Image 1 (cartoon, rainbow, N blue to C red):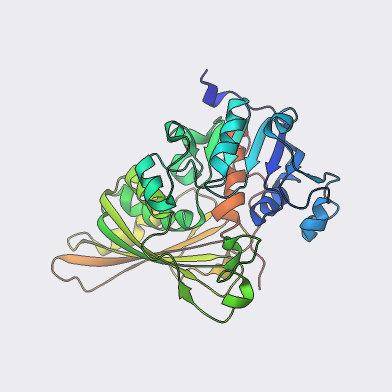
Image 2: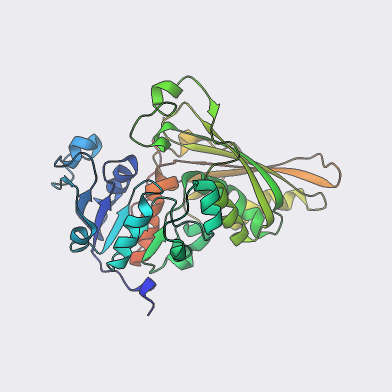
Length: 358
């Protein structure tokens, strides 16, 4: 049996590295009540010695564990799997140490999502420190790579924008309709910027405004293009404009592209429902547009298609939209979905609770 697919025990001893961040909080919200998991270590560079509930108030009383600054060798003695929620450019070396210690890993950063070192260099603006390890991690989006995740021991969790945009566009890539330039704008909440406030990302500074950032240069661009090629897109290029929105959680992605006008509009409109039949976390809408409020705090995804009735020059415009919670389906919750597949248990274990309303 391959070392990348050795079975994990149940219950699985799990350590969380980066436990004081928002991603860490979301991981632990699920892990601490998971019937097949025992959380053994909480690791971070800040909050050392504090109880988890002193950092994340919603988790007060859930565990007696305290935050510690522990080296991988110490953590690995008590863990079968480590969830690493560190920033990209920092995570790569830490994750590699755990892999070398024989511990299964889910990496929530962007450091092992791409297969191409040149694309990493272009969008992350540094050379990857371990380029020979690119392409050795299963990509953690079950709707795209479910088979790769069953029993995997190294998983790269998808990016938040990449999750929403990929899920909006994959049905059309699978039909062979997606090629050339795709335009996307996606609005995101302030929690996506992390727990540490900074100029331009701190919520009070963005609560009354809208602004773009990293237009056409966002680091999730090559990840999305890679996903679409995997699904069947040809010669695809993404023009992606992210927008900072005045909300805490959520992403709304709006994507548009052209298809041949000879394709039946009804067939285009039915593509999402066909592609996602049986996917319990994806709601394909026909009577309204996707909304962040309907999915915030949950693992659910809302998608919808609008087909332009006015073809021009032999082409027809298609609009595809998706709404997700950036921290849950767009982050740590999706990592738990991958973990369930790694453990060989119900993929949706603990993940079907609906969003709060209002």
